[in-house]
Image 1 (spheres, rainbow, N blue to C red):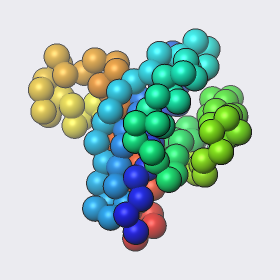
Image 2 (cartoon, rainbow, N blue to C red):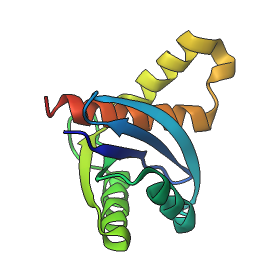
Image 3 (tube, rainbow, N blue to C red):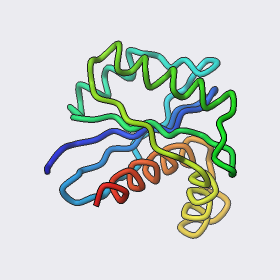
Amino acid sequence: MSRTLLGFDYGLKSIGVAVGQEITASARPLTALKANDGVPDWNQVERLLKEWQPALLVVGLPLNMDGTEQDISRRARKFANRLHGRFGLAVELQDERLTTTDARARLFEAGGYKALGKDAVDAVSAQLILESWMESRL
């Protein structure tokens, strides 16, 4: 398959976004959208969707380490449902445990403390969510 995918790392203040290609099973960070109590500027989301024309959206599902859900899990599900409802695209959820830790480690290795900006961490987290979704489909 040669589908373009967008991945989202949902947060209350920032939502990381990454783009990926199913044919190469690879993704790269794009940006981080500002959010107000978990609500993005939907016009920015729409612009990203028009630019990248994704066939599928993948939203990270934050879970506790034991796999149980928390309040932010419910809110991430609501965000995924809103993406589907507003734009009519297929949306899947992907376990995102430890992606922020992994993202920080990757960025630190590449550029030290200066590379650890919040937007960069959120975008790389979205990349890792998307990559883990693709790896789980191989």
